[in-house]
Length: 173
Image 1 (tube, rainbow, N blue to C red):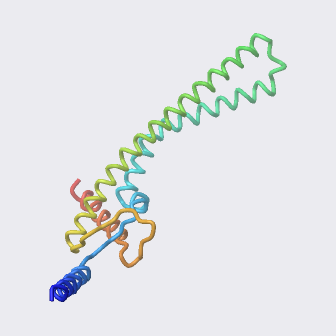
Image 2 (cartoon, rainbow, N blue to C red; image 1 turned 90 degrees about the vertical axis):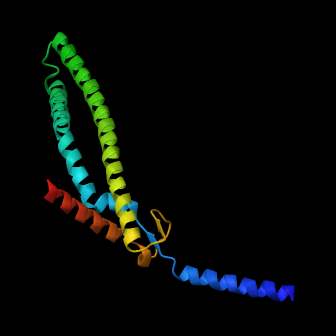
Image 3 (tube, helix red, strand yellow; image 1 turned 120 degrees about the horizontal axis):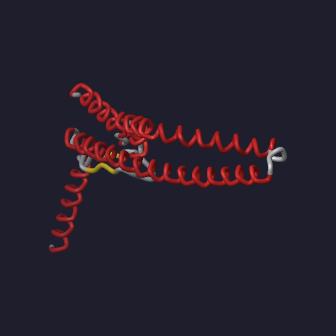
């Protein structure tokens, strides 16, 4: 008799679990895609590009000057006096050292700014995901998965939601 009660209880619990599982909604978001394709990500990329374009042009100008000086030394180096040749070589060495320093600082600053801007976009994406989850009654949303069925992928919804926020933000300004 006790065994029959345990079996009945187990069957009822399993039945309740499968009924609850049927109502369980799961979604998956491809965060990398959101960071590549969303309106805030594109806006951040343009902002960074504008912010760093001056320094990039300065580095390119210095690179052209170094190449011109290198060409001068290769073509006309034998025509220069020893003192002038040494001075031009020192100038070229100093240019190259300065250029390497500028490039390193540029990369470091660029990476830092990209990380700052991407963290802002990621925060906006998380808010969009939460809003979608609440509005559409999702129980669980994962941001990274080894495999995702397109049926549960809500990345497009998140990108559209962020595009709507970007449009709303433009109207407010």
